[in-house]
Image (tube, rainbow, N blue to C red; front, top):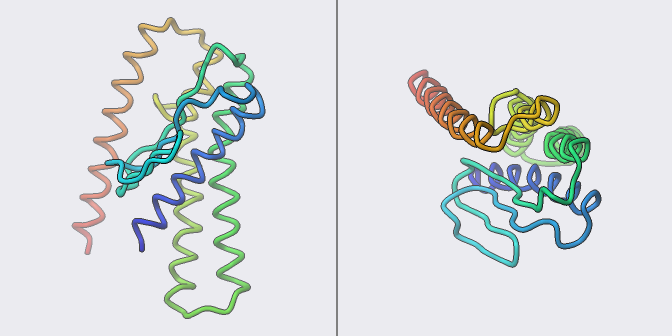
Length: 168
């Protein structure tokens, strides 16, 4: 259930990006929506995995301006904040078992963290996309920075996960 909640949170984040792409670039601009890995479910443009490791929305960049890319990048964290608020309100207002209440509070905090983490200016996170649109970095250098950044994010996430597990 925990994995499903985290993958669902990742999916909501990516759907925030996809909605912004749809609004700003029009129908057909979104090419793929992916949340989690490895993929266990596919339906149309949607791909959902079992582990909440990564997510992305692939879309036709030629259909958006740099300002639109900034809005698209912010839409994911905004969706995460909205989901965090929904979990928090549900935990506070709905009748539920104390265990579920704690889980909803934890998911609220996790979604706030997801939003904040994604706003860090590290490639390929959303904060980097926002910054990149102002820096005008060439495609080759941008791709190299994204690969390096993805490695840093992966290594840092693995280190934090292992550190947290060691504290148990």
